[in-house]
Length: 219
Image 1 (cartoon, one colour):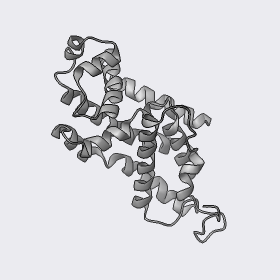
Image 2 (cartoon, rainbow, N blue to C red; image 1 turned 90 degrees about the horizontal axis):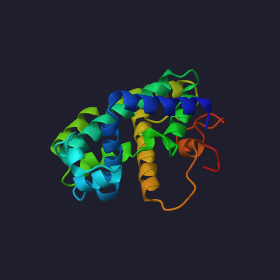
Image 3 (cartoon, rainbow, N blue to C red; image 1 turned 30 degrees about the vertical axis):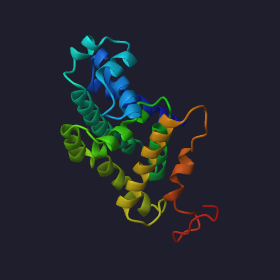
C-alpha cells in the first residue's frame, strides 16, 4: 500500500465518523451491512443485526424504527461515501493514473471502510427483491456521484496518454463493476485466497507505452 492509499483510507474512515458521529449508530450500521450483505434485505431481521452488533433488539429500536430505515440510511451513506471517495483521490497530487491506482488500492484494502460492502449495498438497493422504495429512490438519485468525479480523471488520463481511448463512461462503469464484484467476492470467499492488485485491476484501461492504443501482448 502506498502512502497516498493509506491517506485515502484514513479520509474514508474520518468521513464516515463525521457523517455518523454517534458510536452506537455506527456499530448498528456496520453490522447491518454485514447482515444485509450475507442474507439479503428480505431475509434479514432486526434481531440478526442486534445480535451481530452485540446489542438487544430494544436498543436498536431506540435508534431505528425498522430495518427499512436502517437499509435506507446505509444506501444514503454508501452513495455519498462513494462519491467522496473518488473526490478525495482527485485532490491528490499526481498523474491521473496514479490517482486511480491509489483509489483502487484503498478500495481493495480489506480493512478499508470503503470496502465495507458499500458497492454491494448499492447494487442490492437497485435490484433486490423487497428492498424499500426509499432506498431505491436514494440510490437512483445519487448513483451518478462517483461517476461525476471519476470520469474527469479518466478524460485527463486519456489526454496524458495514460488511459486507452475508449468512452470514459464505459471505462467508469467497467471500473466500478469490477470493484463491486470484488466486494461481493470478498464477502463470499472462505479462507485466504489471493485478490488482484490495483495494477491487475487497472490493466483494462491502462494504455500501452507502445502508443496508438495498442495493449500489451500478455493482456
